[in-house]
Amino acid sequence: MPEETCEVLIVGGGPTGLLLAALLAQRGVDVRLVERRSAPSTHSRAIGLHPPALAALEAVGLGEAAVAAGVPIRGGSARSRGRELGRLSFERVWPGRPFVLSLPQSRTEELLEERLAALAPGAMRRGWEVTAVRETREGALVTARCATDAAPSRLRARVVVGADGARSRVRDLLGVGTTGGPYPDAYLMGDFADPTGAEHDRGTVLHLEPDGIIESFPLPGGRRRWVAHTGSAPPPVADPADLTEIVRSRTGETPAAASVSMISGFTVRRRTARRLVTARCVLIGDAAHEISPIGGQGITLGWLDALDLAPLLHRAVADGSCEPLPDQLAWQTFERTCRRRARVAGTLAHVNMALGRPLPAPLLALRDLAVRAALRTPARRAMAWAYSMGWVRSMPSSPPGRPAH
Ligand SMILES: Cc1cc2nc3c(=O)[nH]c(=O)nc-3n(C[C@H](O)[C@H](O)[C@H](O)COP(=O)(O)OP(=O)(O)OC[C@H]3O[C@@H](n4cnc5c(N)ncnc54)[C@H](O)[C@@H]3O)c2cc1C
Image (tube, rainbow, N blue to C red; front, side, top):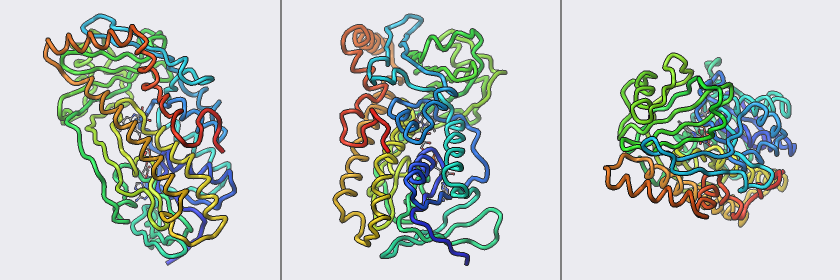
């Protein structure tokens, strides 16, 4: 079996793995990244990049390119039964970064992949699926099946990073279990043309309606993302006509079904790996902590993991120590910090989802009253702080107020 060696092997070329690979390549670490998919994903999926995510992009020289490709969301409003309950601005939470950037995940990954190719040509291997991981005293040995090769390949690394998403194979292969589980909520989401051409000025709009929330967000290219709560199961087939009808019946707004560029139904889970650091492997991103996408903090969380991990990995390969990673104080601190951030983000996403569930009329009136009060008093600063991940600033980690490299 062909065998290759490197200092750090990353499994998974989603946003988390790609950012980490670029950060390591910048530090001169000999890094490889293997990605199961043979071609880049075209799914717009995650669109919200919070201010700490912009700092992460700046750390690999992509801040300006991302802002040029995306749409800044400077705030938004909450509405219920045709009336505005109040507005929220993100402009004051992060000095120098007064917005959440809307950028489809496919474009974010494209920018990162290009950057990685420039920093470390050939470091990323597409069409390679990891099927086995074995930890040794000096490192870890990984077996991968290549889409174009009949024979599997072996990769030997000082440290292996599992950034392979919510259904992490690396996590399973290491025998690391998870805590948490599914939520009783399902959603239908789609991207549509923005017929008014002025949608961006509205920012994010949350419609808190009796039959469940409708969320809408500006997208680049004169488009808008619509997300609808659909009870405990998404429709069996994700049909744009169903979503536009749900949006129309709950809000009176009429996105054109024919203009859809992405439609998908999804259920949500909250799961955390029981261990993030094993003898010679580390889990980050969704592989380490999956939270509900409602509130859109997943990419930012994964990137904060990567920012903290890059200097640790650099040191680990430079000092050549074989001491198991979990025995070292710096790695214990890393694990604690990642868990703490995921706990806060997961709790906020939990509250967000609860806010958007269907409600009977008397409770709906109470909820409207509470939201209206919060958005018209100084409590709205706390809401802006929560919705733009201002809480990250008070956590002990790579300070996202400045590029962390
Ligand atoms: C509908 C939806 C909307 C969302 N909206 C937002 C949002 O607005 N903002 C936000 O921040 N987050 C959002 N999220 C969450 C966000 O998409 C995830 O948090 C993010 O993609 C996690 O990145 P990751 O790199 O850790 O994992 P992933 O993006 O899942 O990437 C993992 C990669 O590993 C690869 N892989 C898996 N197994 C193997 C293997 N055995 N060998 C090799 N490669 C493998 C996969 O092909 C994949 O490319 C949303 C999620 C969903 C589902």
